[in-house]
Length: 294
Image (cartoon, rainbow, N blue to C red; front, side):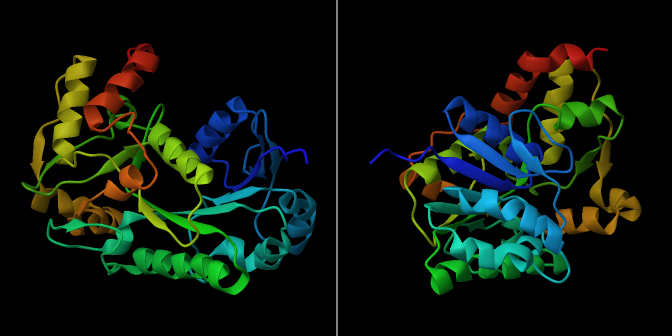
């Protein structure tokens, strides 16, 4: 029997989905999915959950061996499952499903370390929506024996989406809140973690996908300025900066936790390409630093 060409259907060929798609196409995969703007090399479909759109993607989705959702949750639940749960249940060739969630589901731990066994305790509505969506996706495993995996991500950065871009457009601040550290993850490391999971499925598994070295955001900004050869923005006390923050910005700073990534290493064999922010920023600068000098 000839092995079927692996085929990823990705709901949300945005920033992360496009990077993953490129890596898989290099490995000989077929990639299709949904996107706001059709991209090169992929069968891309517009999708907002309407019945006619579900009908348009159903035939392609049924040929997928792997499915990934990168789509954020909505107020009424996960928009993808609401539209295509039954189609997924009818897919005969699926060996892997992935759902991209957030480490925000852990909420605030006052700087304590969390891992995948830590109970979820989101601080706000956005986090609670993600917890509900995780449960919805994992229920597919229980209800239909579908091979679902959940990946919890912190802040994502990479080429075209980093502190360099914020600095170039005058949107970066250095906020001082001592001891308040954040994990982050380079988009290339998300792609390699997902591919590692695809190679060794473990239905029902949950993985934290983050770097090794959480640090205060002001440190990241200062290093980026050093690389760019510019003066860093002045330090602003958090309580002063908070006065002009959006609700989303305040929720970002309200949670203080350190995230363990031990499981992706021990179970998936992932060796991070960019284990810390310096490695990631250096790679971005080497790739496209000249664009920030313009």
